[in-house]
Amino acid sequence: MNGFIRGIVTGTVAAASKLLRLDVSGRSDETIEDREALQQYGLQSRPPDGAEAVLIRQGNHILIVASDDRRYRIALSKGEVALSTDEGDVIHLKRNHEIDITAGTGGKVNVSAGSEVNVSAPTVRLGGLALATALGIVTGACSCAITGAPHPVTSQTVKATL
Image 1 (cartoon, rainbow, N blue to C red):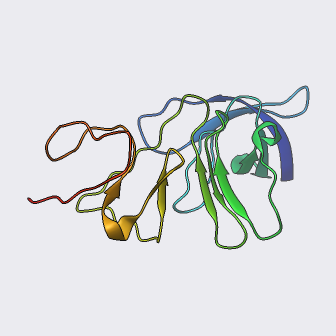
Image 2 (cartoon, rainbow, N blue to C red):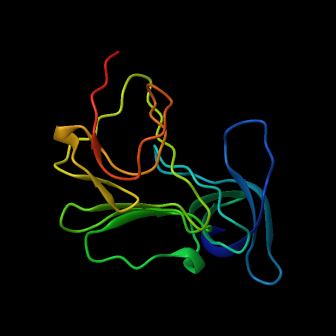
């Protein structure tokens, strides 16, 4: 028999490989176990139990081709794109050239680079306080990465010599 099956993810199969395999329940009499789930190149996900899945059946071969979880969708305007998790973490590519990155409650955002991180903007805001990048102004109570001494709470122009 060939066709599509719509089901609910009931579990992720632990595997030694990086291949995603899922257990899915179809109709009330249908349990589909340990089936490969295809994913788009460059994007990986591990859907939570309760997510929806679409499977293709060709004879005895069943392949999961899509999964979604409407419980964790965010509102998008036409043309927008987002990556999101069930914990409220979101990377949202919005209209008007705006990108929002949100770490859910109590979360943090890490930026790692092997060489350097460049921020190129007229103004950078840290905790709502402005940092005028061209002038080398540091605003806020933080420790200096160079000397280790605390910066004053008020703005101060600084010069770093390495």
